[in-house]
Amino acid sequence: MKTVSICFVCLGNICRSPTAEGVMRHLVAQAKLADRILIDSAGTGDWHIGATPDERAQQAAANRGYDLTALRGRQIAAEDFERFDLLIAMDDKNVAALRQISPPAQRDKIRLLMEFVPETDARWGGAREVVDPYFGGAEGFEQVLDQCETACRALIATLRPQLLD
Image: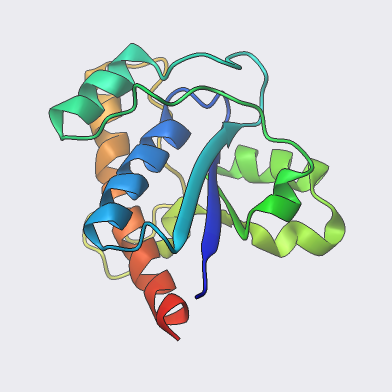
């Protein structure tokens, strides 16, 4: 049985990447693929190691039925490039940070989450980055959820054929 391991990555691992992890876990469970898609998240920085996700992220996620309470911040490590098949960054700065610590042979594992959204998507097609809501209000966390839901559904659709081969 084929499996794919994914680590979502943002700066501090308290807003965007744990939101993506929570959304993806939920959607993967709904798709009955939890035994085939392994999911984690991490940050490129070390400021929030061991911390719970931002309260605003948790509240916005809970309002949509996602539970982020068990997640804890951690920093990405060099061994993660061996452990995961995909390291999916939220923005270009995260991609650059991942490339700095990635072994050259593993750089093809680094992707942007929004890359999985089709260009034809009327709302998000062509968007490169998941917005950083940290310094804004509640609407930013709602937008992150909207982007993560769309991109994670597209990611599952992309992965499904290779998992069922």
